[in-house]
Image (cartoon, rainbow, N blue to C red; front, side, top):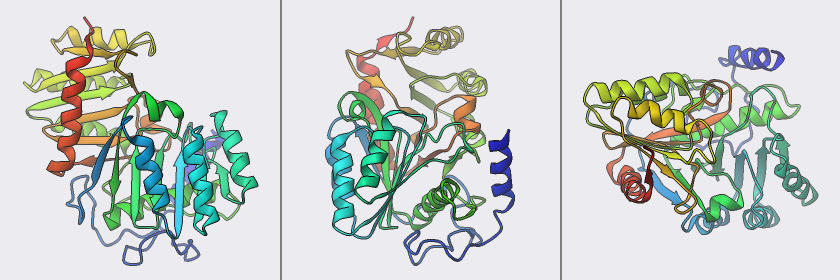
Length: 348
């Protein structure tokens, strides 16, 4: 209860502007850090100035993330739910050693993070536990030089680099980057002793928990007219399940891939529920990959982010994602879904 009240207090103060925000928080030509009054990007599909780049894990993932970290010239701001990959750890330390300002937020409830945090602090990096106002700080994103935001479903764990299916994107649109930076510095302040720096997300493309994920995910599913593909670790949230079924009932072609029930108890019930209304479901097993993704595809538009399909994730966690509606970028996710559909096994 105390955590919820604290979060409400911060949200209620969101109209305030804090001029002492770190100077590298946003690009110089972006909207003020805590003021989205320009009205740009207020819907999930407001056109971006720059198309995002989509990537898929695990193939080549570690090399891609290393290259992104190594590209930083001035600042890196990372929020990560789980971090145990030594290669990425070492490249962040190297970035700090060459003069990059590195800030890292990690959820203390993941025990592996403690060792990484201790090493960062020992090397002079700024590292903090995420604030307790969220049930879990489950977001996975990186802001580079206030010019790029990397938003992902993958953690910085060894499994993500070797055996997990995940999706991410590099976003260079100034408004999106500024919004991800707002989120980071709000949580950075909450995790420290500098006072609240509320992130005004009244005007954003992003899908963010606990702010708007539930409504935007449901609206996205309900928008499907021709096709709806789901590739997710699990589907526990009742409203999301119902929206998927309703899509099928209005004639949308729906397909669902879930992680095997051997790893995610409850997926057998979800698959049975979908089968009862004629929705085909498949399972990913260790023979293919561990399914850690949270992908939705509706009529060629993709949702990529950290949000799982549970009440906690959509309403009480810190999560970050976005719709990828640019055709070339979204097509990468559709092609990967088709490949995964071909190799996963029928649930029924």
